[in-house]
Length: 115
Image (cartoon, rainbow, N blue to C red):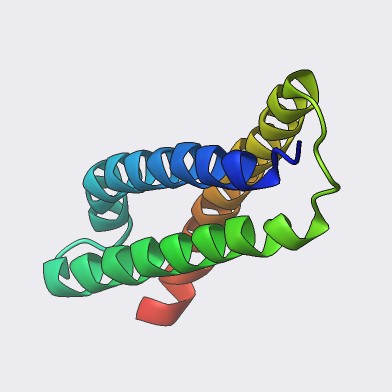
């Protein structure tokens, strides 16, 4: 029996939930952080935060969908669990890297853009 379709649905459900939840949290808390970097420009801060959220969603959900083509044929339930675990952990790792990269870029270069 081929478990790939079941794996795809479970994987996309889990990763989409993680991506949306982390995106909401970062969007809500990130606005305060961006506002601290760019004082007296609340409208610019809001727009930057919205663009970051949109780029985050597009990049991560697109990457999740693209990884489906690299899956090998899953023939057992244990292989299904293993594949979902590995692929989901890769997504969580990428999300954390992107988060810290965004913080670095914003803190390093935003002051140059405002001046």
